[in-house]
Image (tube, rainbow, N blue to C red; front, side, top):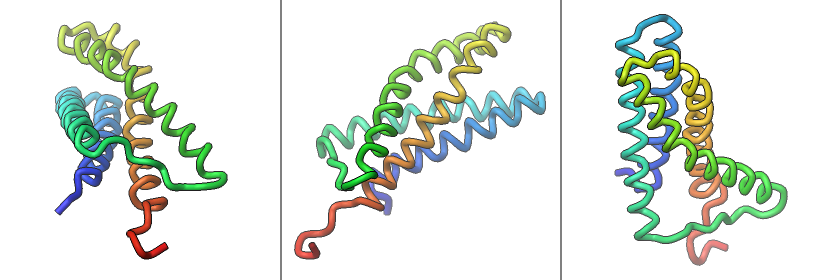
Length: 144
């Protein structure tokens, strides 16, 4: 059984794969496959957001346990991830709206910014999971 943190990381990873696959499809002019991937990425990201909010409403903030050089690296990733995650919501909305309304020139102009930012957020979300919950996870009581 997955923990909720593992579920969140899996949803982020799935979103990244869907975004990259959707991009590959549009480069091949496979519009329907592109559309399917991108709409599924929106759904996956929305499921992540709901799961993430519910998880942190229940457990609160989870402290990063790493020390030394990794702390500024982690917090740099976290800061850029958080800023872009906030920006992605309206960017993805505008990108989706323009595609849905067949404004493809305008869709492409904003998608050039949306895709790399969204990919960065998805990939760094997985990296943050590994840093917090796997690599620098708090040792169980009595093992320190």
